[in-house]
Length: 312
Image (tube, rainbow, N blue to C red; front, side, top):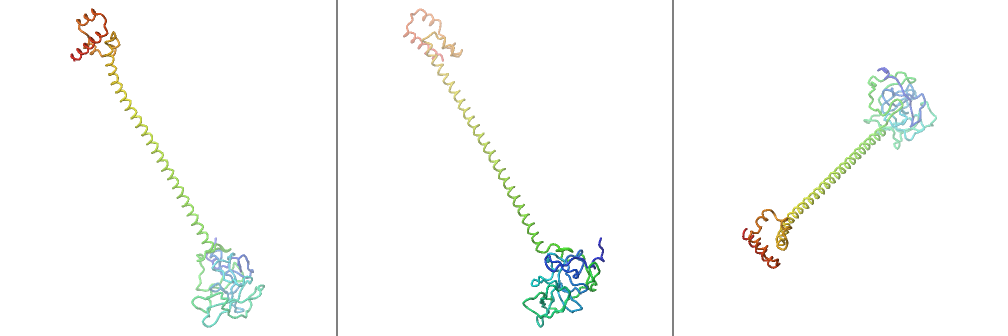
């Protein structure tokens, strides 16, 4: 487990480009394992602000590398035009541009810091010092190797809560990687939300369609019920009409009774009417004594009908 004293150690591996491991003489300007990516300088040199270094022996201000293997951290110095050099000497401009620092090219095989004779080249500015200053602030002096303590400037206090958390001792996620992850998460959330919306919408449409189908089936059943009721009403009407017809048949049987023995007519008449229409004894005696005559029978029958009607 680390303690507060570990923050003062130089820890980590240095790179001078993406995937380009630096010489072991270049060490971190802090504990990359605890503070995140750190700038790198040559051993026993001074670490300065803006990721710069200073060699007291040659009095050369330069930039080297950082502990981010992808070389994307803000602790990595910008050295686009010098991809093969492990360090790049800086030349300060004069006059109104005294805060500008440009690079100096040299042979890529040079590892040890050497005096460089180059002038300001405003077309290749590597650093613009903040607040228009003509010098950099001291952070601390490096030890002779890693895992040893850095002699920090009294005004500088290392902290594990580094503002740049894009990587650890061996580097980490850069700002671009974080942005890509954030965009991916947002797109995933939108995709899930869209899928949920369409799924719920489809279920709702299916439910509404089912309800409509049930309502349609109920309406059809009600229609059949109305037809059945109508048919029943017609049946009742037919039965009533049948009773009316039956009355007509009774009348017909009554008319037919005069030309026959009247048995069929009696079976179709109600008892009350049979009693009311029975002939008197005189009429019965008179009919028995007279010969059968269809004409007189009809007349007698008509007279009987008239008498029955008068009786009513």
